[in-house]
Image (cartoon, rainbow, N blue to C red; front, side, top):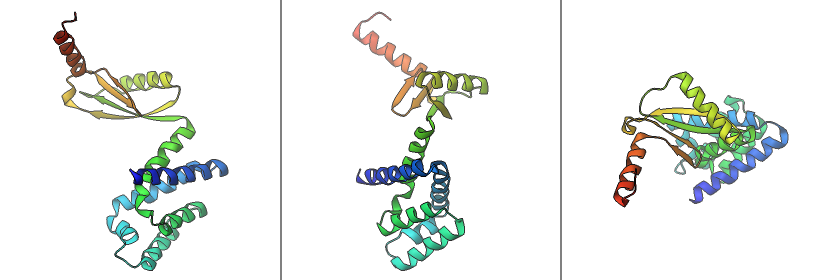
Length: 183
Protein backbone atom coordinates (compact mmCIF):
# COMPACT_ATOMS: atom_id res chain seq x y z
CA UNK A 1 0.00 0.00 0.00
CA UNK A 2 2.88 2.35 0.81
CA UNK A 3 4.33 1.68 -2.65
CA UNK A 4 1.15 2.94 -4.29
CA UNK A 5 1.14 6.10 -2.16
CA UNK A 6 4.77 6.76 -3.13
CA UNK A 7 4.02 6.20 -6.82
CA UNK A 8 0.99 8.47 -6.65
CA UNK A 9 3.01 11.23 -4.96
CA UNK A 10 5.74 11.21 -7.62
CA UNK A 11 3.20 11.04 -10.46
CA UNK A 12 1.33 14.03 -9.02
CA UNK A 13 4.56 16.01 -8.70
CA UNK A 14 5.46 15.33 -12.33
CA UNK A 15 1.98 16.20 -13.61
CA UNK A 16 2.13 19.50 -11.70
CA UNK A 17 5.40 20.32 -13.42
CA UNK A 18 3.85 19.33 -16.75
CA UNK A 19 0.81 21.56 -16.14
CA UNK A 20 3.06 24.44 -15.20
CA UNK A 21 5.33 24.27 -18.25
CA UNK A 22 2.72 22.90 -20.69
CA UNK A 23 4.70 19.72 -21.37
CA UNK A 24 2.47 17.17 -19.60
CA UNK A 25 1.85 15.24 -22.82
CA UNK A 26 5.54 15.19 -23.68
CA UNK A 27 6.39 13.86 -20.22
CA UNK A 28 3.65 11.26 -20.62
CA UNK A 29 5.31 9.91 -23.76
CA UNK A 30 8.81 9.96 -22.29
CA UNK A 31 7.76 8.29 -19.02
CA UNK A 32 5.77 5.64 -20.84
CA UNK A 33 8.70 5.00 -23.18
CA UNK A 34 11.13 4.42 -20.32
CA UNK A 35 8.61 2.31 -18.41
CA UNK A 36 7.89 0.18 -21.50
CA UNK A 37 11.62 -0.23 -22.12
CA UNK A 38 12.10 -1.49 -18.55
CA UNK A 39 9.13 -3.81 -19.02
CA UNK A 40 10.54 -5.29 -22.24
CA UNK A 41 14.20 -5.36 -21.22
CA UNK A 42 14.23 -6.93 -17.76
CA UNK A 43 18.05 -7.11 -17.75
CA UNK A 44 18.20 -3.33 -18.21
CA UNK A 45 15.67 -2.79 -15.45
CA UNK A 46 17.70 -5.01 -13.11
CA UNK A 47 20.91 -3.20 -14.04
CA UNK A 48 19.33 0.03 -12.80
CA UNK A 49 17.16 -1.15 -9.91
CA UNK A 50 18.92 -4.14 -8.32
CA UNK A 51 20.56 -3.04 -5.04
CA UNK A 52 23.02 -5.94 -5.26
CA UNK A 53 24.89 -3.99 -7.94
CA UNK A 54 27.11 -1.07 -6.98
CA UNK A 55 25.04 2.15 -6.88
CA UNK A 56 27.60 4.12 -8.89
CA UNK A 57 27.46 1.55 -11.70
CA UNK A 58 23.64 1.49 -11.67
CA UNK A 59 23.62 5.29 -11.82
CA UNK A 60 26.00 5.22 -14.79
CA UNK A 61 23.68 2.80 -16.63
CA UNK A 62 20.73 5.14 -15.99
CA UNK A 63 22.69 8.19 -17.13
CA UNK A 64 23.70 6.38 -20.33
CA UNK A 65 20.08 5.33 -20.90
CA UNK A 66 18.86 8.91 -20.46
CA UNK A 67 21.49 10.14 -22.88
CA UNK A 68 20.68 7.49 -25.52
CA UNK A 69 16.93 8.16 -25.30
CA UNK A 70 17.54 11.92 -25.58
CA UNK A 71 15.06 12.70 -22.79
CA UNK A 72 14.04 16.20 -21.80
CA UNK A 73 15.86 17.91 -18.93
CA UNK A 74 12.82 17.58 -16.66
CA UNK A 75 12.44 13.85 -17.35
CA UNK A 76 16.17 13.30 -16.92
CA UNK A 77 16.11 15.09 -13.58
CA UNK A 78 12.96 13.20 -12.56
CA UNK A 79 14.51 9.80 -13.30
CA UNK A 80 17.73 10.75 -11.49
CA UNK A 81 15.69 11.93 -8.50
CA UNK A 82 13.86 8.59 -8.45
CA UNK A 83 17.21 6.82 -8.53
CA UNK A 84 18.76 8.99 -5.80
CA UNK A 85 15.73 8.53 -3.52
CA UNK A 86 15.69 4.76 -4.08
CA UNK A 87 12.35 4.95 -5.89
CA UNK A 88 13.38 3.96 -9.41
CA UNK A 89 11.82 0.53 -8.81
CA UNK A 90 8.41 2.22 -8.64
CA UNK A 91 8.67 3.50 -12.22
CA UNK A 92 5.92 1.25 -13.59
CA UNK A 93 3.44 2.31 -10.89
CA UNK A 94 4.42 5.96 -11.26
CA UNK A 95 3.80 5.67 -15.00
CA UNK A 96 0.38 4.09 -14.42
CA UNK A 97 -0.69 6.94 -12.13
CA UNK A 98 0.82 9.57 -14.39
CA UNK A 99 -1.08 8.22 -17.41
CA UNK A 100 -4.35 8.46 -15.47
CA UNK A 101 -3.57 12.01 -14.31
CA UNK A 102 -2.60 13.07 -17.84
CA UNK A 103 -5.84 11.60 -19.19
CA UNK A 104 -7.80 13.51 -16.56
CA UNK A 105 -5.97 16.69 -17.51
CA UNK A 106 -7.04 16.19 -21.14
CA UNK A 107 -10.64 15.29 -20.18
CA UNK A 108 -10.25 11.65 -21.19
CA UNK A 109 -11.60 8.64 -19.32
CA UNK A 110 -10.47 5.08 -19.93
CA UNK A 111 -13.11 2.40 -20.01
CA UNK A 112 -13.14 -1.35 -20.44
CA UNK A 113 -15.85 -3.03 -22.47
CA UNK A 114 -16.30 -6.76 -21.92
CA UNK A 115 -18.55 -8.80 -24.19
CA UNK A 116 -19.28 -12.49 -24.66
CA UNK A 117 -18.68 -12.22 -28.40
CA UNK A 118 -17.13 -9.91 -30.94
CA UNK A 119 -18.90 -6.57 -31.42
CA UNK A 120 -19.05 -4.63 -34.65
CA UNK A 121 -17.08 -1.41 -34.80
CA UNK A 122 -20.38 0.44 -35.20
CA UNK A 123 -21.71 -1.05 -31.94
CA UNK A 124 -18.47 -0.18 -30.12
CA UNK A 125 -18.66 3.39 -31.44
CA UNK A 126 -22.27 3.73 -30.24
CA UNK A 127 -21.32 2.44 -26.79
CA UNK A 128 -18.32 4.81 -26.67
CA UNK A 129 -20.56 7.72 -27.64
CA UNK A 130 -23.21 6.84 -25.03
CA UNK A 131 -20.58 6.52 -22.30
CA UNK A 132 -18.98 9.79 -23.37
CA UNK A 133 -22.34 11.58 -23.13
CA UNK A 134 -23.01 9.96 -19.75
CA UNK A 135 -19.80 11.13 -18.06
CA UNK A 136 -19.11 14.21 -20.20
CA UNK A 137 -15.60 13.12 -21.14
CA UNK A 138 -13.94 11.59 -24.17
CA UNK A 139 -13.66 7.83 -23.80
CA UNK A 140 -10.76 5.57 -24.70
CA UNK A 141 -12.37 2.15 -24.87
CA UNK A 142 -10.50 -1.12 -24.42
CA UNK A 143 -12.42 -4.14 -25.71
CA UNK A 144 -12.15 -7.63 -24.21
CA UNK A 145 -14.02 -10.86 -24.78
CA UNK A 146 -15.22 -13.13 -21.98
CA UNK A 147 -17.16 -16.21 -23.11
CA UNK A 148 -18.33 -16.75 -19.50
CA UNK A 149 -20.75 -13.82 -19.85
CA UNK A 150 -23.24 -15.80 -21.99
CA UNK A 151 -24.42 -12.53 -23.58
CA UNK A 152 -24.67 -8.80 -23.00
CA UNK A 153 -21.85 -6.45 -22.01
CA UNK A 154 -20.06 -5.19 -18.92
CA UNK A 155 -18.45 -1.75 -18.93
CA UNK A 156 -16.00 -0.40 -16.36
CA UNK A 157 -15.08 3.27 -16.12
CA UNK A 158 -12.82 3.71 -13.11
CA UNK A 159 -14.85 2.47 -10.14
CA UNK A 160 -18.16 2.56 -12.02
CA UNK A 161 -19.33 -0.81 -13.35
CA UNK A 162 -22.28 -1.01 -15.72
CA UNK A 163 -23.26 -4.67 -15.87
CA UNK A 164 -25.74 -5.53 -18.60
CA UNK A 165 -24.68 -9.14 -18.92
CA UNK A 166 -27.19 -11.96 -19.16
CA UNK A 167 -25.23 -13.83 -16.50
CA UNK A 168 -25.85 -11.04 -13.97
CA UNK A 169 -29.49 -10.71 -15.00
CA UNK A 170 -29.98 -14.45 -14.43
CA UNK A 171 -28.28 -14.23 -11.03
CA UNK A 172 -30.53 -11.29 -10.06
CA UNK A 173 -33.59 -13.23 -11.20
CA UNK A 174 -32.47 -16.23 -9.13
CA UNK A 175 -32.10 -14.04 -6.03
CA UNK A 176 -35.54 -12.51 -6.62
CA UNK A 177 -37.08 -15.96 -6.88
CA UNK A 178 -35.35 -17.03 -3.65
CA UNK A 179 -36.86 -14.02 -1.86
CA UNK A 180 -40.28 -14.86 -3.29
CA UNK A 181 -40.54 -11.71 -5.38
CA UNK A 182 -42.31 -11.57 -8.69
CA UNK A 183 -39.97 -11.53 -11.65
